[in-house]
Length: 282
Image (cartoon, rainbow, N blue to C red; front, side, top):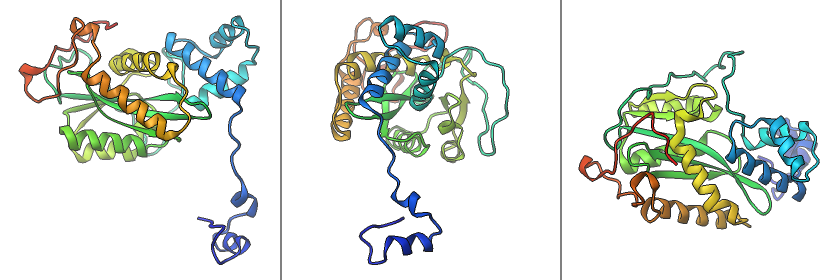
């Protein structure tokens, strides 16, 4: 909005848009290397036990020699979009445009591709800073259909990934997510409704409702992210794309008797398995 190289002085530009000069000149301070190192450790602990809250993570950090206040753990987890998974009382109603939809997959037998898609967001640590990754998968084949990286937790990159998945593979009958603000936003739910998709959302605090995406994150973090420290967004984009291609086409999966995922197809006979909502995949 404010262009320092414009022929108008910055003072004049600020007056025209009714913006204070301090706001125009403000540059957000990056997280320190110490904070980034702590956040990476919090991410590892959280992926091991998603039920861990700030108190538990604080204790685990201190057992590893990291002295830290609980308030700092809370701030880091909030910044990373991490929340302890456990049943919570519903203490507030969704805001305008943030309707919560019921969970539609309980007891549902998913028997073919493109019947159910699911999406989730995870935190990606880098050498300096961090990003957020959203992935869309097909519940039946477990194939990653689309993904997007972002440096903010808005809804736009989730909408872009979902639109790409639908354009490339077709609209599903049901689309499942958690109750995060990105997925309950009007921009996201409106995009699904425009394609005639039924919207399903996990129960509050129930990670198991979206277990297949959570299992993807665990493999992805252990096999790719924690082994690297991306220096740039370009490097992160390439590394993540290469891993997800490997996950789809080359990686053996225990749930498939160590076979690889088949190429995504609408042909039911070519898909590897049936969905069992009670099965625990490792």
